[in-house]
Picture 1 (cartoon, rainbow, N blue to C red):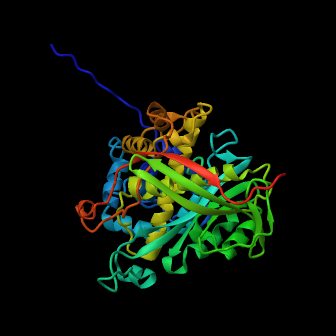
Picture 2: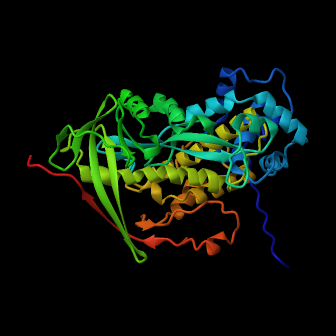
Picture 3: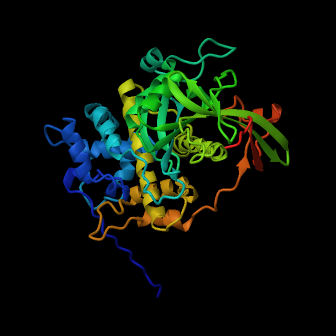
Length: 455
């Protein structure tokens, strides 16, 4: 006689038509009360109880950001797949479309505003430098469908072969906490306005106690003045074409100067990267409002600037790990905005779950936590409708955090990889163009240029 094993599981979700409104274990970070409060504040609560209440539609949008490869009907199936014991209404694709239109953009934007932030504590490893929260600003482009409305508003790119090519794109500019890679703030709009114009809107989230890292594309005087006016310090790379005046010398080789109306300290350095493929040397010029060379040595500031690349890891997680380099679903501008806010919100919620988990092991660098592992664990919890309601004892780890802690990556090694086009015209282009895609272990040497003087 063969033995039989019966596994039963209790699912705790909301009642009635609200049952599909969940995000698995991540619902504990985005609870029903938070979503209901946002809907009430935005005046988006349904006037009559429908098959798709507004709260459920919010969670549908968030779940869609978890399952970017699926259409909305498939996302609905994932939300309701484990709820077979409940009377779930049959929903059509048209009904889902109308529900998203009724919801609008404001609730998703308000939800993101509630959740955005550094997701770090004072003790979070590598989140602070010299008592300052390390943040970075940079931009990236997201592809949107080539529909008449998006094309008319956003335009299309061009190349040497045609006047218009590819998909229309929307420019996303974010302020990111380098230690946790959490999004503190984000804005987006047509790329024709430029990164610097959009970046100025992020000044609302800059304040004293921060040091913001800026690439040379964002080092124009207007943006630097805007950043300095907030009380935040900045460390910006300047282009080689700029020749700031020397107003005085510091003992560490840096010098006092002025950019616009901001008094800055300029650090010129030579950085050499050595790998088995050879050596590469470049000269870099950094500007900072940290004028005290004793508290903030030039050499340490040059090392700190490397943290700016953490924002690139943020964009990689959003565009590659979550989106899979796909084009956004929405074909209207309000729909695009709605989808982007959902994407940013879910990314932020996963980062919060990761930060909560790594905080339970003192000294653990959030860099060692795999975003891919957390994303997959979050998807599994949604499909199973697991961990929707928190227990009486609050557990900061949970199934997602435990999956992350069980698969912590080794401490980061110094490696370099040549930059390459992310989406070549042909998958064989790397061979035909002889592009080196290998990653190399590297050693880096930093030499501060200038004329040090005796203190």
